Length: 290
Image (cartoon, rainbow, N blue to C red):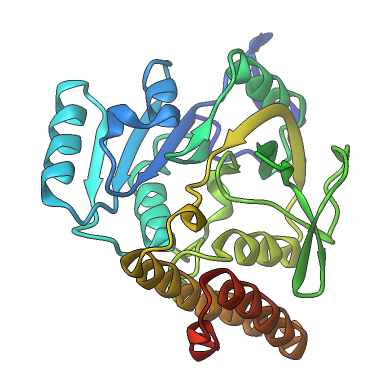
C-alpha cells in the first residue's frame, strides 16, 4: 500500500526502479436489486481489484438474502444496511470497511455502465498524478454529458463538451469517483449523513473544493441509466414520485444551507420544478412538498 504518500514525495510510486501499482478498492451501493443484475457490479466483480464490497440498502429481505449469499459464494465483501438507510450512510460504511486495505476507493452506483479498458485508463491517471486526491470520470446519460457539470451558486447546468480541467465552479456525481483513502482524517465521515439521497455528491464535492483537494479527470466515459417514472401516471406511481420529490426538496435545501448558498434562488428553482410536476400529473399536490 501507498497509504502514507506525502505531497513532497513524488517517487512514492517507485521502489527499486519498479513502478508500484496502487491498490484500488470498489464500493458499490445497491437498492432492491439482485447484485447479478447490476451492470456495474458484474463488471467490477470480474476484475482483480484489491477489495470489493457491496453495500446493500435493500429493504426487501429476499433480495438482501440473495445478495449476501451471492457475495459469500464469490468471496466478495458484503454489508447489509438493514434496509434503506440512505446513500451517505452506505458510502461511509463501505469506505470504512476497506479504507485501511487500499490506497484508493472507487464509488459505483448499481446503474452505471462501464466500458472496456477503463481500468487501464484509471491506473494510468493515478500513476501520472500521484498527488491528486479525487479522480473524476465523464458520465453520460440519455441526454448527453451529465457529469461533470457547472455550478452557479446553488444551480447546476450541463456542460456542452468535456472539460480538460476541473475548476471550483464545477461539480460531479459520486458514481465513478475515485478517492484517495488518506483524505479521511480523525475518523470524520466523508459523506454527510444528514442527507438521504439527493445532492450528496454536490455537497461532498463542494466541501472537498473548500478544503483544497486536488482533482483530476481520468479519461473514461461511463453511462448512467435512470428509471423514467413519468411514463406511468397511476395513483400509486404518483405517491412514489411525490415522496421522491419531497426527499429531493429536503436534501437540496440542506445542501444549500450547508454550503451557505442562496436559499432564495433554491426555493424559486424548487417552485419551478413543482409547477412542472403538477402540470405533468394534473395536480397541485407537489406544492405541499415545498
